[in-house]
Image (cartoon, rainbow, N blue to C red; front, side, top):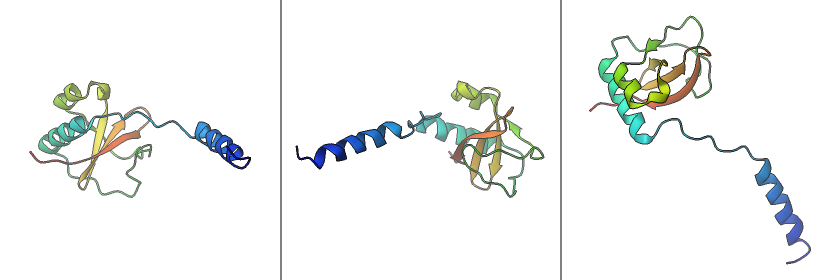
Length: 111
């Protein structure tokens, strides 16, 4: 190994060690599709048309009403028991109700 190669490898190793770990996915692809179908079929509320970022880790404003996740959705993804959701156009934001943080954004699906 050349004298230049060793410092480069060391620097690359240090950079990779400092990189944040990739978060484990909250939902499998199958769960996302199934939840999207359940919520699309059972949701009676009009889609919300607000002005905040619909993204993972965004906070839903306190004045926005969250819908209760249907029982069938909670059975499909037990890790979301007690969570709420918000439909925005063709997307569904799954929300942790205490912090009001969006934990996942999934598409609406038709069967």
